Length: 173
Image 1 (cartoon, rainbow, N blue to C red):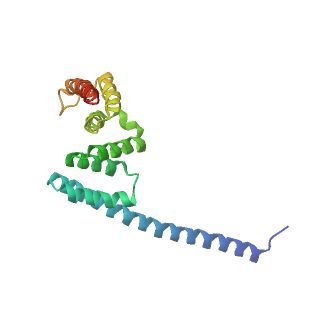
Image 2: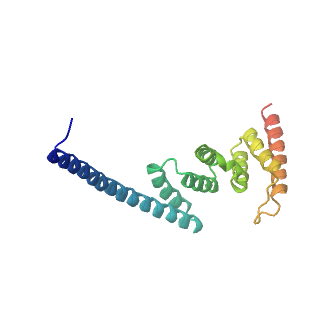
Image 3: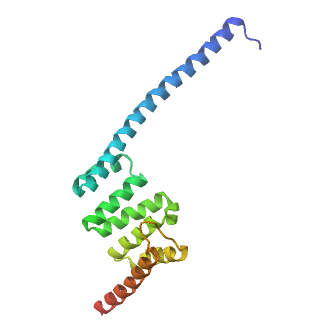
């Protein structure tokens, strides 16, 4: 089957139109996505500023707006966990920290995240989970510049778990 010159031009024109149409649609969708990203970034930055100023309620509210649109945002879940922990709801904070870990399993290699996770688990009375996390911290021999006694702190948290675990065991009897 041979194509005549007008048919070839028609096919080529259709391909060009299809490509141009695809580029226009992609551009429109990309612009919409960029606007959404800028809006969420602004909300996140606002939340960080509010948290640093001590407005935990405002920070949590801004982050909840981010999480409505991006529930799997690692950084938003992490910051909201820290804010909720500051407010004292350690069970809810533990859920958000666990979600961060579900989103990014490589966080188990982040010494700051892991010690915070251990502390939050202790506060949420999740002693077995806290022990696993803190033993990992201990076995990794991590140190942090701004926490020079990192390993000592990990050891004291592990001791605290044992004391609390024993105390709760005797309280339940």
